[in-house]
Length: 370
Image (cartoon, rainbow, N blue to C red; front, side, top):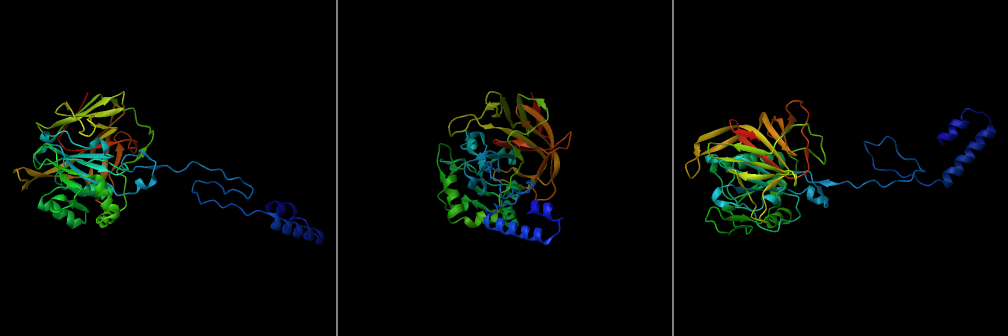
């Protein structure tokens, strides 16, 4: 009709008007209905009635925890499960860290560290993980950013009181009789508690713990990911060393053939008890934070607890592809996700897809590169 109006609209005469009316009637009777596409903000124009729709690529679901592609889109919206796994030398090797989508490591009393292993995007885990230990203040910050549910075994009175005060969803296996916690293995208590991720998942999604999943909120990605992001040149690094006290040293070694970082503790290789392989990460990101030593809060061994300030701003280092990049982090309020930028340019940090190991260390810790 646009064509007809441009051609005949300037002509006068009764005969021509009659002719136009006849053509309009004919078109109305013979024209097929137009295909109306779904609105697309990137579309420059809608297809015409004579266009042949072309099927585009199907959207790819990605794991919010590490940016990897998912065959099942439903896995991208489920509630993350965070399991508090210990890193005591007498309870090594841990089980299941290589099955986690994301691992967060932070100091606890005595300057040792503890792992927050996040399980979300594997359809099943298939074996218990652990050893599971008690929760800490930083679990609140993890939940506020990612909207996970924390599964742990014990926790200080003031720590658990803070969980309740802010409405954080968690399950303390020490005070419940859930069968997905079980004692096993060769270590004595308290180093012998393991957690069945699949059984816990069932209770979150279709069992007695669905209210915990609802309280967790809609999952949020803690980082920005892309398949092949353009990282700055950085500096080459073969070995990462992190030291949080005079006696606590851990780090990573770059394996160029596997394009992975390999975990070390006290300069010794670390292994995952499930499969017996080295503990690996695709990306290691270090966040340097202010830490308070709570002299009035002692653990059962008499060591003061730690409190990391994960709201604020500070520095860090990104290790990716065998190279290091100085970064800055910022989180203005507790309800926000931490943002990361490159220290020299201010550009946003975009991580490559793959398991991330998020190292949280206090100001004054040593970071070495070789």
